[in-house]
Image (tube, rainbow, N blue to C red; front, top):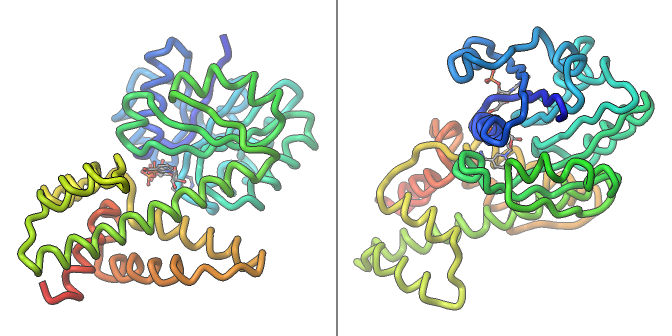
Length: 290
Ligand code: NAP
């Protein structure tokens, strides 16, 4: 069986590593904060650096915060790339730009290794219970070879095309989430001011043609005022910014997303950056005088 290395024990990485262990994989880890990793997975071997992890693994999966984190993990002197060799595979699950994904793929290919992008959706609970959806980009044969590994952490892996297409798909998805969540928050706020109970609003939404599991999930969290972080506002703003930058390169205006990002920026300015994205409702409510 493949020796698997995993980088990034954040909200997503913790659940993904647990899924790999449940499925019998032998896993080694590296995380920027070593003590956090030890507290979470005391029994797992911890590598000294991403490079050392890659030297001891056949495949390394990374799920870290943002482009700066990926740059560090891959391209630093002690990064994964330094240990790339024929037969080695790197899997990028972080949400970053299509351009960075393509640069990574080319760098690994230049060393005779391979890289597959596999950004993910399903959030904290999907990571914990192994029901993630992966959107891959890169060599279809590499996708097929790595599918059993991905499927040990999720229910599906959809090949989206060449390197960068997975990242593009992921940004489209998070753009849609932004609209759905901000729309829900605006609707709930007007309903609340108008005396319509949130439970009634959610019941009707879920019985309607525009029902969505996403409205049910985030609606319930807002109703319970439970803003425990599944996906942080900081990281959604990162994805909105990546999407706006990608669209700008294509000379494609995104007036809706640009306006919505400002609502989430206001949440960050009010100290809610680390809170769950559903906490953005507080910004909408404050603006409404609630
Ligand atoms: P998170 O809980 O904030 O964890 C971030 C991870 O990245 C931590 O392991 C952190 O290390 C590491 N990191 C941050 N900056 C770093 C740097 N400069 N160098 C090395 N490591 C660094 O984030 P998450 O929610 O797990 O998300 C991880 C990725 O998955 C992000 O790209 C996110 O957009 C994407 N994603 C998230 C969700 C979700 O619902 N949460 C869903 C789909 C995709 P420390 O432990 O040292 O802080």
